[in-house]
Image (cartoon, rainbow, N blue to C red; front, side, top):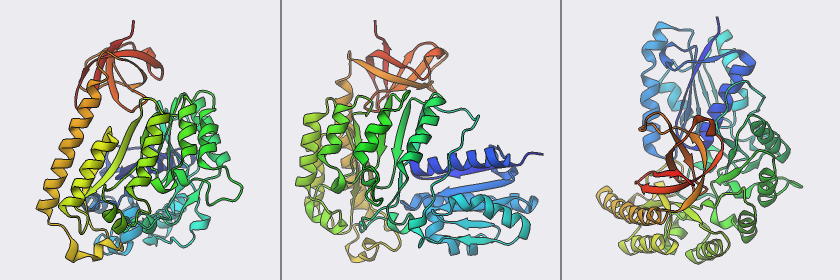
Length: 444
């Protein structure tokens, strides 16, 4: 009887990638099949996140809910991995003694052996070593008969060398490690052979790609090489750091039609004083130079960003500078959050400077209200305009005969059309706009 696996994924797109490739590994090489119900699965894997406190709490709650299932089926293997496991491995073992395996962000390729060992020895294991970051192994990608989506994530880089005072990534992911370009390009060639049309290149500091490998191509050249792969229509990437984003990258994006005019460049704050406290290694003038050059070189640029509100010591003046930056840089979208202290980070120790939740919450509402106004204004500019969309699915709230796709600027567009268009580029004219999507008709 075939064994079953269920994977619970929290957090970022990198976690989605790791979960997907891990499932393919267990399916292709060990015969596991997917089970929607974790309580009846032979192997339950939690891929956790520690970037925000709520992700920690949600994962812990779900792990706790499996106690009765484990009691009914002692042969069930429960494994908890990823960023939260990296930070709280011993705590997880003590709080949930029925968890069989706790592993960190550098042990993904070891997981099959860890599962086999616990099945044989019935002895729990804890593997959270980060010291071997130079020997980090990326998950394998083997050809599989599993269906592929129109767009796929591809990890090209792991870790970060920037120790921002609010961020856990260097502690959970380790230092920057680039994946060999030949492996990346081979994976994307396989994806293209399976009908994938868009790839999203992933890394904690994606545009630092290649800086840790002597003789490896740098990020700009990798972008060009990926874009040149036959069958790939669109290429995106996340997440970039302004301190290693340069004009050469912008020029490559501007001059390569497959590279989307959709850039995610976190600013975090509009105040130089707060950026210094965050140790972000740039000031607003540097961000402004990048922004202005992008606007000059990339037509119809969609610029997205990340912003932290209520960072320790943030004054109303600092926050006003953030609002001013949002207006000046005209972000199409911002992912904004109230500051959440993370263990082992510098800022978590500055308790006397913490901003009251009521104050930070009120600032967050003001920021998000401003961002929604800008987003709505951008949306209205699409009305009656012809845009090209990559058809990737069907909208949940529409009936038969409707399709959904993404513009180059990552806007969701719903329109009527045949299922045969799935995975194709179609020209449509925008007729209506909504907070999170747009409606269109096929262009004449």
